Each structure stands twice: as structure tokens, then as C-alpha cells.
Length: 85
Image 1 (cartoon, helix red, strand yellow):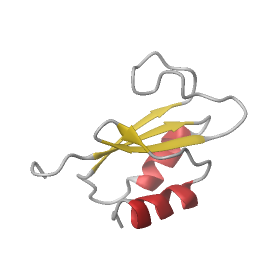
Image 2 (cartoon, helix red, strand yellow):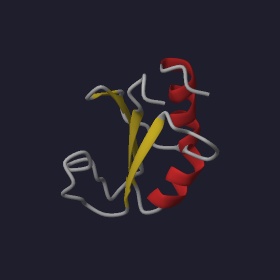
Image 3 (cartoon, rainbow, N blue to C red):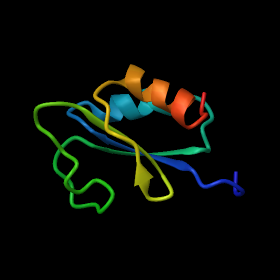
């Protein structure tokens, strides 16, 4: 758990908590999820909120992939692009 840097997920949605639970279910020491249901001033979440759509950002080492709008797309990115199942 301490050898690799974890993946960070920024979830900005009115149902962000449910999305975070779905993406991090089970034992996932390799993922840290940040969820907000409104505009946030937390640096990692700042300026990522959109009232029109869900925004899910998957990041590692201060670099984020393009945002996706649903959990199935986020899971595909985690599995294919970054190697997380």
C-alpha cells in the first residue's frame, strides 16, 4: 500500500456520495475518492463542479485524464487506462 501512489478520483455531482461508494466498493487502498455535491473550495475539487452534469476526474501524480460523466465510463478508464480492476 505504501509503495505506489494512489489514484485520486474527483467526483462532482448531486449524487457524488453514491458514485464514490460505487467506484471504491470493496478493499481499494489504491484509490482516494473526493466527492462534492456542490461547488467546493477544496483545491482538488475547486473549479470542477458543473450543475448540468456529473463530472468524474481520475488522476494520478497531479495529472488527470479527461473527465467522464458516468460510473461505467470511469470504471473503463480505471481498468483500461490505469490498470485498476
